[in-house]
Image 1 (cartoon, helix red, strand yellow):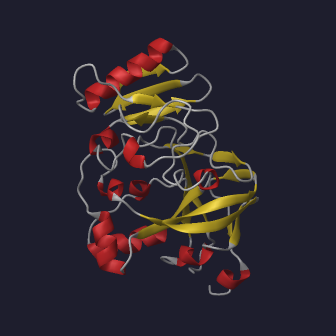
Image 2 (cartoon, helix red, strand yellow):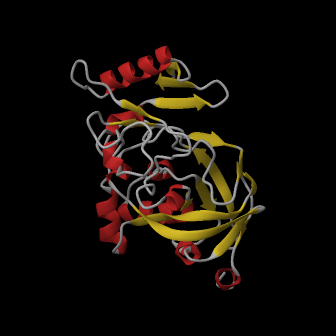
Length: 268
């Protein structure tokens, strides 16, 4: 561990699977639940396995996401939970404002993304939005895993960038929580252990194995860095970050201290 106090260095909400993040100053977490409103909306592939009311998780390949649709990263999106309005901007200019609570707004959203994705005439994405379900990458494993929070150690990202000789934006990894003040890859010691973020208690559940979505540069939509391949070549694995389950909820604020288990803290 480093000598600085380990802490939260960024909180991010991803309302729509595959689209851009919204930074948060704080978030109220509940036991066994992920970030409120995180990945509760998705754009499903027409003719695929998703159907409204689906009661189990399915592969991310059934949705339009960065793995295959890098251009989505070039669109800045935000969702206002209070009004249910999804706004899309390109280079700071608003190109869509869709009220998802109305049929007209949902139609506008699907028509817009059909154009963005170059779908054939008459073909549109399917709006995936089902009460109680999240479209996380872990949702296919179980409903419990669907509610995991994703965390990223910024020191690990910096170590990776230094070794490959290229800048690496942490937002490539689409984590809910960024951590600062740890040694590179010290987060591996938190998998299987309980730790605290401020007044919130979590348990590390599994490392995050990275896919081709991380090859896309945030903000540009360019696939410019073969991240999984470089991770494997550099470290012998394709892991960056980890998942955790909320054991005891509370208010989590940006800057909150990371409380380490004794076995890990003793290694500092």
